[in-house]
Structures are given as structure tokens and as C-alpha cells.
Length: 502
Image 1: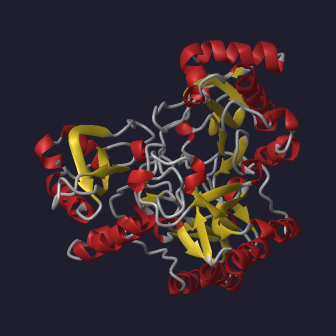
Image 2 (image 1 turned 180 degrees about the horizontal axis):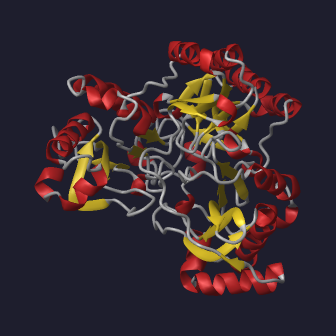
């Protein structure tokens, strides 16, 4: 069923301490989680309204924007799936290979084809990959899942370093705009950053090169042990030189051109939240649902607001955000107000726009702790506690990412967050001999881009969920007090005393 976007969800009432102790069938509920595959995060008004209708009619109002640019539902009955598929297919959407050991949803820049500073629009390559190979039986039994990113944005907005394969926009001094190829990234319990092949690929060749990389994974990827069956392990053993040689000689039948690395992204955020100029004098408006959680009514409100603003192009982002494209200048202010009225803020605090959370204990059978509700409570608490720091509520507020994960699998990218939180069970401070309580192991100062890397782990640095707002407030205030000029959180963490991070 995963090949069609379906997982059984967690049966209610099972605490996180029992996750690893029970058999899968003991954790299974009779209801399903469903992912809708949305390559590049692109939806029209008609598609958005259908997504909203499915939420309200079949999913008890649930809907989450994932960091794979999908919409994810819960409480789905298997009896309703034929009607859901029919509704999705009527507007050009589907669930084929949204899960499973297959090429998953292809990430794309949320502002592809619209951003004024775009190097190259990768949309045609994404469309060709999906048209030619999604659903292809020859790629439907990979060693494990396979994740792709394609972005021509100079802001590096698809987290290319942690994809199995990624194409990053560059301007070649001889051949013009195209893509630099990265292979072998991934997080989970063994995080590894992708490596450059050193190859330049023009837009029209991206799909062919992608097909070669995924077939290398199919043919050479490790299958005996599932925890080593990701492409990152093969890449770590081969290295980029051998990988490129095999790609060229066995799968492409030709040499690729050498190319330069992508320049570091401009300083600032990659989430596209706020009001930004796009091509032809128009604007796009990005909004921040709290930890990616939306619902059917909110999606309908988003569609209504976008329609009034004259837009038929909405994008979900790899940061669990939403972007409305093609807004004329006189309509921007009204759109921002309309979206705010339905709970989608373009004027979000640094905490709201920087906090992500995975599905967590509420629905996920692998989770150890609750995440979505914990994240929403954390955001509300931080906004209340930092009301005395107005700079954290402005469009150019210093960036701070807080990624909340319900288990070690890092679906919300704990290792590359300023404050990364991995769910654990901890002794109850009030009753150490009693049942455990939910908590988090903390890593600090992670990130992607120039100077990026995995977060710093301090021995024994953990917090209970109940004490999480106190910890985050404490460490953020120390950063704000001690930072030099506009020093980032990660840069401060790298030089801070351990006592200031506890």
C-alpha cells in the first residue's frame, strides 16, 4: 500500500515508551495516513480546493504540509480510497509512489519560474522525470526510498545536501545556466551530506542523468541490511570519482562536462515567507502554518484568498510553508490580511517561521514522543516570552530553526537545525522510579550551506517536553546577549562555552 501513498497510522492510546516493545500489528490502527504526491509542491486553485474537500470529507479535517512538499492526511478509511483517487485524478493529482522503496516526490524550488533572481527554472526537468519514470515497474523495487531535489534558485531552497540526488542551479562560464550534480545525501540515524560529482548538466539533460543515478542505486545499492540500503552508503564507499565514472560509462554512454560548484547562497532565509518581488513586476507571498499543520477549512480559505488576489499558482515548500505566486502590487496587502485571517501568517515571528515538526506520536507508528502539539505550544510560548524583543517579530529577524523529531529517523531534519530535537523517553524528574516521560535529546548549531554541518551534541544535553520552552528561552536569550553584531545562532554555538548551552 505504501507504493500508493498509504501507511497504517498509530492506534490511539499507545504511549511512546511501548513503541519498540510492540509488534507492528499491535501498533496498527484501522485507519490510514495518506500522502498526496505533489512534485515541486505545485497546485492550482482547483487542485487546492480538491485537497481541502478531501480533508473535510474523508480525513476528519486533517492535513499537514510536509517537508517533501506533499499534503498528508490522517483518519483515512480504506473503503474511501477509490473515491479519493477519483477526486485527485480529476484535477491531475495522485498518490503513485508517494511512499515506498521508489523515487519519492521530486522537490523543486517553490518559486521556480517566478523568482526574479532565479538562475534556471528546473520545472521542465521535474515534469519529464515524473512523466517518464514515476510508476515505471523497473524503478519500483529500489533498495530503499530515493529522494530528489531540483532547484535553480540561488538560495538553495530544496536542501540539496541531504537528497539522494540533487541538481543545483549554476551559471557555467562557458555553457550558461544549468545544474551542478550532488549525490548521496541523507539523514536518519547515520547522517551524511551529499557530494558533488563535479559535473555540469544542462536543463535538457537533467532527466537522463537522474535516470542514470537512480538505476545505479537499483543495480548496485545495498539490499542485505535495510539500515544500510540508502544510496549514501554506496556513495560513501565508492566516492564521487568512481560514481561519476560508472554513471558515464555504464548508464549514459558519454562523458559529462566538468562544472564549477554553486556559489554560497545569499545571507538570509530559504523559506520564502513574507512578501517578495518576482518577475514581470508581480510579487509572491509566503506564509507559515504552525509546524506545517493546516486543515480543510484553512486550505479553502487559502484558495479563496489566492483567487481574490488573482493567483492560480500555489506552492508548498520543503520548509512546511506555503507560497502564493503572481500577485499584483495593489493586491498584496489585502492578500496578506486575508491569509492572516485564516491562520496563515506572512508576518510570522522568527519562531513560527523557523519551527518544523514531523508527524510524531499522534499518528506515526515509529514515534516515541508527540511533536506537532509540542511544537505549536513551543511557538506560542516563545512568542509570548519574547514579546520584549521586537526584532524577533520583523521580516528581517535573525533566523532560528527549531526542528522537532519524534524518533531518531529525523524526518524533520534534527541534525541540520539550529536547535535539533530528537524524541526520547526520560526519567520523570518528579518520580525517577516511575514511568518515563516524553523528552528530547538536543543538538545545537546545525545547518546547510556555506559553513554548514551537523549540530553539536553535548553529553547529557536533554530536556523533558514540559521543560522545553524553558530551555529554548534560556539558550536563545544567551545567544541574543552574547552574539557579536549579526552573528548567527550556529556561529555563536561553535564558540560558546558548554555552560551557556546547557
